[in-house]
Image (cartoon, rainbow over all chains, first blue to last red):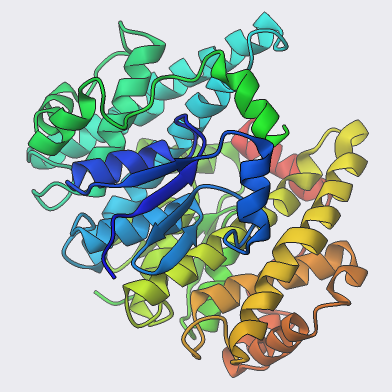
Length: 224
Length: 222
């Protein structure tokens, strides 16, 4: 039964945002069920929907998938954004995982509430992110693109690796508009102007804003 | 050119062990180039072998793959341990990621400051008992098949069984109430390739002690 995928998460970026980006870039409409109170989360925990008692959960093609990577892999395969063979898939995975590593650092930074994180700790985290972005991650992706001179990271075709990277570039830019050295700006521009992505980037789409005062709410719902 | 895969890492489990297990269980022989000093690591970095300047790195089929999951996914596909279609792959991924979450907690425990270690250990025991082990036991209960997905050995079974060995090392009592998991552990351990890997003298790595941690700190500078 082919209904739209249903995304269960809080009304914020967190670990669901890359899934929203991927679906959107694939031109797939999706519904969202927001978890707003602890009771909402308990309800899906208790009805057996949550294999590991965690969200994200995505209902798609008769399955209730958990674990971000499982969900992303499935969507990428379904919408032909995962390369043409296993070697391309390996490259796509490599690049996606690099993006995820930096993305994780940035996400953790955004989850540090202003009130209880000592400024020195937050600064140290930010410095580390800047350092890794400038010296490790951005150069790696710039190098890949330079090495083949093609429009996309793998196989001269749009793949999830490009979408994940471009999403990350927006977060890097949010962190510091001056950005960190060389950005793969041509790729960012190219992907951003694809119709489905352009639509997603406009106000009013299902794209979520940065977490700020919402952090307190998040902490309450997920009890951490 | 089909030489054996070559694994670049230091002499410890760390993030390479899951790869060693998977290759071994697939019956694939592999070589290891051990990183013994920070100079060895620098050399790999300077000669452009490491996309993100990090190990694990595996040379396989003309590629220099980094990132554990990229490597594992490639190996699983190559050796037919990744299910028969995308839906099976989704289940395998789900279970694999659950294993990885608990496995990560266990792997990072030795790095914990001494005053937090007990709290972390208690959390691991709680999560294992109330979240992870029951989830996998329930999967096996739901279909009563020999393996987690599609009635066939897959990477999910191998990763889970590896984890069960670590859980047992941490606290043998944790597996007590999970008969189907114990059955899976026995079944997978008796597969000839796995049995061989479990024997002393194989490429399986022992738990790292203080010395191993010190060596890691020197090589990776943390």
